[in-house]
Length: 104
Image (cartoon, rainbow, N blue to C red; front, side, top):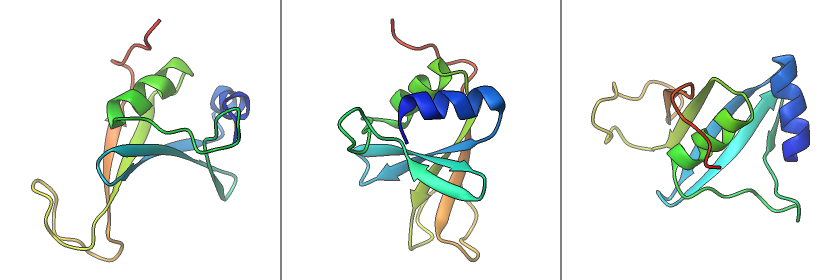
């Protein structure tokens, strides 16, 4: 999914965004809409990569999104501050984007 498509879905209120944490240094945006999912792509068609969850959140805030979910995949109960894993090993943390301002 390209940025223009994501902007359209956000303006319609027709999607949710997840910030996927991969290896602690790569963050991707997964768009959930109409029972489907798609990763955000750059103009070259490759996955848009962010260096932090905050960088991804700031980008999404600039598109008008107010909330996202940071998703960490974890096979073990090792993350401090989260309850023991029940069912899916994904650890999900809500992120309010209203306080983030895009870089100009």
